[in-house]
Length: 103
Image (cartoon, rainbow, N blue to C red):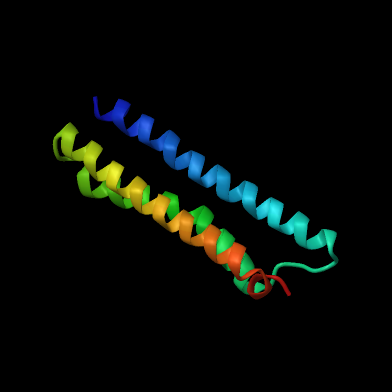
């Protein structure tokens, strides 16, 4: 039961990672189209956006896998909510402060 719950939530976390990789590639292509590149802050933001969902999934798994399946699912759902809020912050920051992440 726990493996099924973890597997379903792992797909959602993997989707967040996949979107971050896609946005990193898109940002690099968009910047190179106008003959600029991402600066260190831009690379850090997008790489952290790739790593963050995996860290949250690992923390949620470590905190809740020994508990009941309802608690396990709720902790993974809370972690997914945290990833979603972080993702919205990354997209908002990189959209509104484009000059800060290219250089």
